Structure formats: structure tokens, C-alpha cells
Image (tube, rainbow, N blue to C red; front, side, top):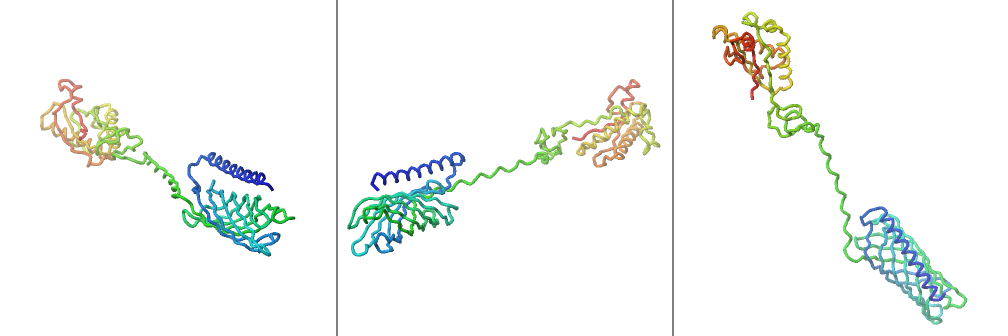
Length: 372
């Protein structure tokens, strides 16, 4: 085969390798990954090995060869090498037969980068032969298998074997070419610093705590519903967590004139109340409900009278009025440690005029005074 045919074979091989590389690049782009999955540095690969020669060569059967390759991985599972190797065979009778081979080889690997990786080998080359009968070029090609192992972050070893065919039809008349088996060992050494390891994936952010289970300011309202999340400790708050003025209004709880009597203490409070008693009882029961909803509230129970009667008598009567309300509250679940008193104020601090019957009726009262 002439040199034109040789160059055509090499061009086809290089084109095929380029297609593989383009296909791999397209796949990488489609996968939208930016992490390098292989070491793409250039390397050199000095090689030493041996041939088991084709008997038609009429040379010794076994022969050493040596060479050097330069290459790189073009994907995680494929590499390309440009190489040169040389051998000199002793011919039967006298003289020798040398070959210098210049070519390109592709290797296709399986397995993980840091494991023993089997691979397939395919290569094409031009072989320049020198012997007593002829000097010249001939095309050649090889196929083989091998195994590779990374031994450091910048070096591998390769062992490979295969079959190389040399289309030399000039040296021996009547022969169109020669097929030789080969076995070679290479040490691959990469140039430059190893590529940086891919950055570890960022840890997912911790799950946000469930605000419905949190009460940061300890006011009894969870953080989801608390519109005032920093109220001081002990502040009375409403359902929205904001400070709330607690008012316990007992206006409407009015007593009959000169009631309760001493003999009515400890009995039914309803008998001492001004008619209609249902109004007064409704106000009392609402006060009980308010105190139960706000367990942090403390109150003073205070009783008052109108101005009719002597001061001493009115003082005693106001104390009885405070006491009967105090007893009603404790009987309905309000603990005594939340109540101060009972305290009587007599006819002091009227809320209405004592000059009218209606005014005096409103002054005969009991108050729950919220302690701040």
C-alpha cells in the first residue's frame, strides 16, 4: 500500500476519535453537570514489551520493542495517544529487520477511575521498515485488550496485549503483510497539578422550627399567633399575644339595702342581691370566667355601702359584702392566693350620688380591683 493510503487510514482514525470526543462533550453538556469526572491532564507513557513474530517474516520468533506515547483522556472512559515505537528483528541467515512505527491509539475503559480498569485498544500507524531488501513505509493497524490501574494521583500502570498487522508487501516477495502478537507494559505519568476535587454538595438548611410549638416570650401564645413576640414576663396578653388591659367590672352586682345580714354569711349569695338577681349573678359568673382565662391575674375584693347608717355599721356591712363575693369566687375555682381581702371601705369612694335611690343602689356594691 502506498503512502496516500497510509495517510487516509490515519485520517479516518483521527476523525473517528474526534467524533467520539464530540459525542462525549455533547453528552456532558446535556447532563448539565459542571463537575470534572476524569483527569484530563496530558501524560507521557514510556513502554517496553515484546513481539511474538509472524513466521513468514523469517526472523527470530520473539523480539523486544520499546516506545513512547503522549496522550490524554478525552472522557472518563476514553483516551487518545500519539506514539512511536521501535524494534529490530534478527533475520534468519544474516542481517536484521528494523521497524519504526508512528501512530495513534484509542483506548476505551470500563470501571471506576481508581479501580483496575479493563480496556479495549485500537490503533493505526505508519511503519517505516529498514532491511537488506527494502526501505520504505507501510500502513499498519492493531487491536488489543489491556488493564490499567491508578497508583498515585499522577501516575498509572498499563499492561496490554494484542495483534498488530503490518501491510509490508515489499520486503519479501510473495508476502502481502505480517501479523505479530505483542505484549507491552507502560508507566503513565501525568503533567501538572491534579484537578481540584469537586466541592461537596452544600448541606440542606435545617428545617425551620414549627412556630406553633414555640412560645419565645413565655406569654402562653404560640409564636405563629403572637403579634407582639417580645412582651415582658408577667404581662397580661390577649389571644394575639399583645398586652391587654384586663377589666373585671362588677357594676351591676348590687345588694339589697342592709344586706347581707350576719346570718346570711356562708349562705346563698343570690338572696342578698337586688332584684332582678339574674343580672347580678350573670356579672358574677362572667368575672369567674375572666379570672379562669387569665390565671396570672390577681385581684383585691373590696366592698362598699351607701351613706345611710352609721359609719361603723357601714364598715362592717361593706366587709360582709366583700366576704360573700370572695367566698363565691373561691367556691367556683378561683384559688385564694389570687385574691387579696376581703376588704371593706364603708361608704367611702361612692360611684354615684347618695342623694337618690338609684345612686345609693349603685353605691351598694363590690369591686374586683386588678393588681398591676
